[in-house]
Image: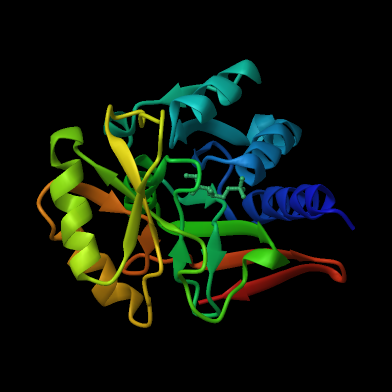
Length: 223
Ligand code: 5RP
């Protein structure tokens, strides 16, 4: 199976998950990236069960609206039963590294509001330790050089994501070479650097369910 076929398979599994576990008429939180895009396209199959959606990026909002879904401002939402999103890496305890698409801050905010985070990814994303994929950090532009120096002190090698501005008007540093043996502690340490908006470690609030696309089928793991 190709990686694309695995993404399509997990998207279908996520549709079944939402249909079976989320009350009809609920608001569905939707992530960002190629796997989330497969989910958005498949969500049309259960459109009548979806009350409205919340998007984690402008790109996702546009795609959802293109399919005729209502996209709400998160501030107008008091209950979000489920959030479906991909990941760049995920461990067996469902801690994630995200933000390859640069939407990490809005993803983390929507995930914080959601009752359940359903992560959808192909088997290549399951890792023993996070950090082989460079860790994205969203930074206020004027703090970029300072934050980069602080990251070097922590042992990381930050690389400015050239030509990329987040939906929030900020920049991204992709950090290589960090030893992320304690993701919860590292998430807090990085977020404590002045000028950091947030980092791509989703450890304090990891996923609740993982739908993992493997050549043998979609495997469901729960935390
Ligand atoms: C975007 C993300 C994505 O979830 C992550 O990059 C995975 O993307 P894809 O499904 O395209 O592999 O965090 O900010």
